[in-house]
Length: 152
Image (cartoon, rainbow, N blue to C red; front, side, top):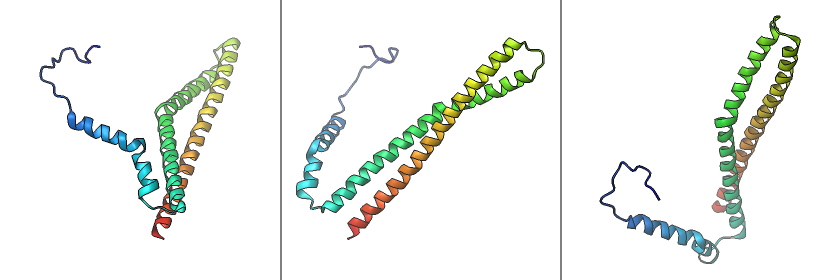
């Protein structure tokens, strides 16, 4: 309803016809025309269709694994670093002799909770890294299989 920047006045504006036409054509092509061409016009063996489908699936899985890994690096890794700093500070506080027994018990409980959260984040990082590695291998294998089928 409102412009993003109301301090910029839009006087002369032109509809982007070329962009609209390209977008419309892409929509039509992606809505089934390319599948029709694959099935009816382009002659592919079942083996090549299977190899190409496996390649597409592996590519999507690889991209998803990369995104998940990058999301963790953006958020989880920062949280993990802060938790580790907080754990170091708790250990320093626990070494002091001038804290009460109640404070010591509270710090020990907080430390255990923090160690559990650090372990969960570390395990998640390892899991995502492992999935990313598996996805890379599967993508490479699917690409090689497709190249082999096409070379026959």
